[in-house]
Length: 173
Image (tube, rainbow, N blue to C red):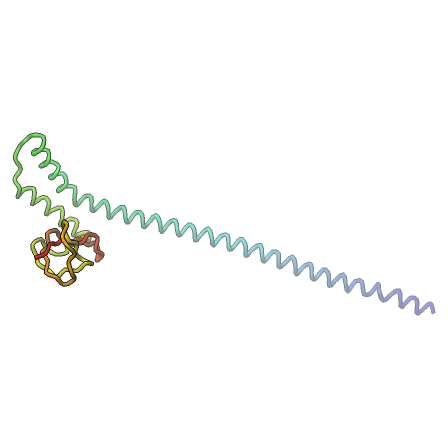
């Protein structure tokens, strides 16, 4: 009976180290998983900050390119604008006559500079065309024009890089 009692007492004692080993193994695994999760969180945060840095850099490059294009346009139109202002001053303030052909030459230079940047005149003044409500706008209090009706352009239409921004002003022929 003593042997039996010793065996009974010994078995739980032997089972306890196995349970402790299993619990330790699970704790080590859980700790490893926690460390792996923390590393992935740091990696995700690092990637997010890198993405934000790249976005900011791209935004800055785009803003710089736009600014450069605007500066080029302003440089191209600076001389004609200065000449127009001078002609206006001569006429309005000093009362000196300004030749219409001189003002027209300056205006044409200004239009050419804008055309170099993508502006396009749609149709010429005095041209006849078939009325298209998507491209033409009746002038004054004219009755409605019907599509296809013959009209005369009185003001050119204006488009920018293929997109119509001002319809041509037309009158019935």
